[in-house]
Image (cartoon, rainbow, N blue to C red):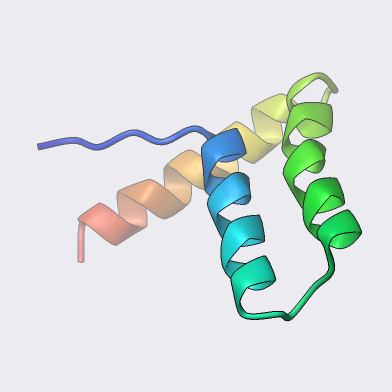
Length: 62
């Protein structure tokens, strides 16, 4: 079964975990989460998506 998750949701989860663990402040977590939107609207979107797809491929083959 394949599970897909968007980078925005993934970064939101990471930000929430960092906030819960009190590793970062609210402002830093917001910047982390919003960077997903910024990356998606730039020329970096394709290389980032390719990199994440490669990581997912590696993770599912182990």
